[in-house]
Image 1 (cartoon, rainbow, N blue to C red):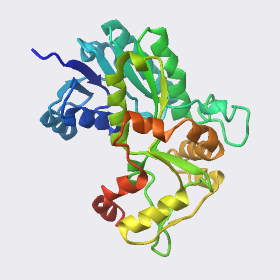
Image 2: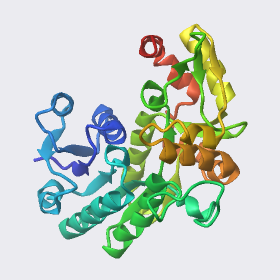
Image 3: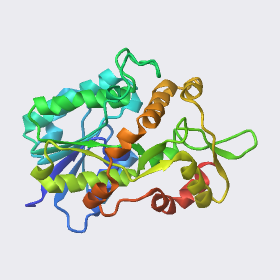
Image 4: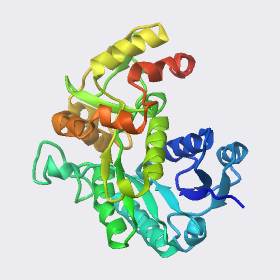
Length: 317
């Protein structure tokens, strides 16, 4: 019979949840055992977590009746929703409400809810600098999570609100550099000269793990995290050194970005515009020294790049 506390992890096969599971299972002096929740326990990603030592169970945030067993006997939880899977703030809020209810019913003693700022506090709905989306939001995947925060409070779940940011692993996917007509790699983010707060997904996991270890000291706290605040031109220069070929920054305007018309172009265009126009407010909330106090292994961008050179060099060929 183990005396270690059980942590239930939603989004366990995704970026943030996976980062938390890896951090907890790599701990040389572990405090917790991990229950990894997925809709597809037979997937290769789920089996990989089993091989690392996690218990894998099935549940679906869109099916509230499936959530109770996932929380059974859990001391704590790491909770994250995936807006980009369906791109609906209302659906994301419904999922968060279901998580809060289930965690409350199970008596979870400490939840870490991965959330974000309400962008409308900086750019109100009636501000025409950027379009209003889904009728109620400026950046739905930010604003919906922020609105969902109160579900956990109302349900009496002792919760830490962990506000994350753009993670550098996006450079392997939706926000990877693209080759221009001349064949050169370009970062085309609509950020101007503003700094972009970034973080490694593994550092989200390690910081959340430290929060759960801290217990009551962090209940009801809002903790905003990043690994570094960098101008995109400086990111491009660092990428140039890492991959051994030029990576240029070609700043678009937010309107030019949104006009590209790909799925999520309005959403991501508004997101980058928020990062840029609310830069000082956003970065000031993320005290890198305080984050490093929680997570001494916190990576800056150069450190993250050094650990991903091989993947970077093959990702964009």
